[in-house]
Length: 116
Image (cartoon, rainbow, N blue to C red):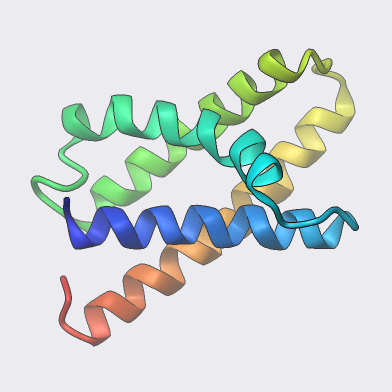
């Protein structure tokens, strides 16, 4: 398993954990699974086609994130049976912004430590 994939997974888990805490929910396996698995599923489907780990570049990370994250959040909404009103799009915008920060921070750290 790629070190970069593990860093990306950690970024996703940290994002979900911070999100749970910010909404006053406990950080537990159920909460993390509910929030991470849909995004991770789409991420893992797209990553081989986009060369996310075969040719790791900032462009590939950005493309994977830009496609997988909204699709995964859409899938999450479907699985949870929640609607797609204005609240979803606000959630999507906030989630995209903060998730991007987590991915950038961890990938940047990996670059700095020469893990990538």
